[in-house]
Image (cartoon, rainbow over all chains, first blue to last red; front, side, top):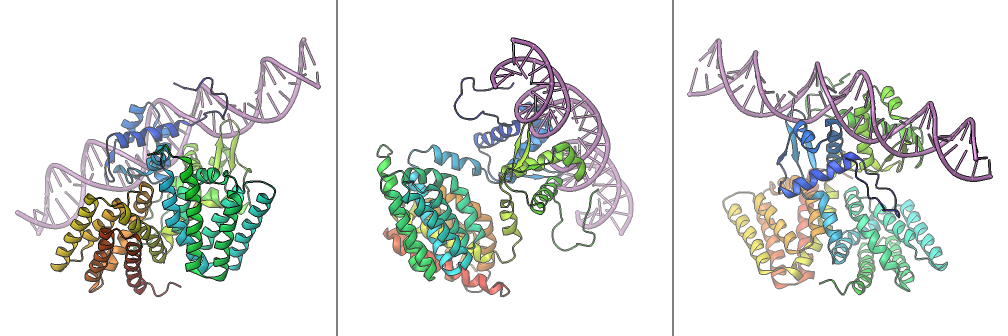
Length: 237
Length: 237
DNA sequence: TTGGGCTATTGGCTAGGCCACTGATCCAGT
DNA sequence: ACTGGATCAGTGGCCTAGCCAATAGCCCAA
């Protein structure tokens, strides 16, 4: 029943809960059988029996899948798939060797627009938060750090300043992927300082309320990260 | 027990599940009591009793809150708050009446980039699919239709031609929201024909392999849709 | 002081059951 | 033939009751 990696000493305990495993099995099952949006999955009682768990646990798994938008549970009718791929695409991209370009493209799309909107909509509080992130990163970089946290705060502050819930949500969606690239990028020698300069350019354009300049500055900034990323994976093809 | 708005005839049924209400009450409780990350919430048995629900339902609510990152449930220890604020974004978007501008912003961000990438990467098959969508929409419009389906196919073909899984996934994420605006937009007199012209401009730029022109054409196209959408919500600031 | 074991507390999960909702079917009345 | 209401099987929603498992604090012996 309970299965545990035996000698997996380093790293935290596996400690996954049953409903998580069940949810994963369900998404896997959906993928294997090629179910599309609108297709029905088996009734709870049958599915619970087949997976060897109680209906309560299965129900937890369905709640989890419902919250992340993979299925819709309809009282008296059944449970249907809403977004077949949703959960797995992020994984798929992570597994993909040359995933960096995709992330760069997406960042460019979202953050360029975010910067332009921020330039139009930022309040004084937004600006203060951006400056604070900038200051924190500067301090960290001066002290020889990589400014990872400040970098993240800066982009978060710009996102907030754009006052677009939808774009913010999409940024959050890919935030985990970005975080990985950020770490690698800022580990390049001299990179934190260059990144900080890029941030300052973006911040000034936002302060001036110039959308085009903000977009251009953010585009350059993302492109710089892109250059760094390309150095790293010549093997990918 | 079950509570229902009595004379709330117009609008859809309330149809919320118990765990959702419970989750909301918990987040509200967290906010009211000013709990910060790391603070503990009452044990399940007590909380269930206090809220008047079974432990199973409470457990579903905690799963939901765990999935969206509000709490962390620790076996044998208790449940602690992780991110006090974050829960409400998706709800907020859905509930927000004037979400149209957000959708426009997001489409502009994603589709402009998609068009540019499509101009760089499109294969002949991609181009054929784009042309087919264009032809289908033209035929429909000539026959007096609104070309809704062709419009959707066109944007789908452009998305595919960009060959970016991540961007495609984000487009899918907002596809439902877009679909609503599309219907309204294409219902405006003369709009289908104008939209078709916009599509043709995008397609030609993609055919020519000119990213900047493709991006500009797509931007104009989205802006045109934006103008239409603005007609509908003069109350929006 | 240290180490091991006990125990209360707390979440994890199961079993079984009843209720509410949905959709299809059937039947009576028009 | 068609409409409308009643019925019924299938499905999810929720509950009660209970045992298992993990954690943390405590006490006691070495």
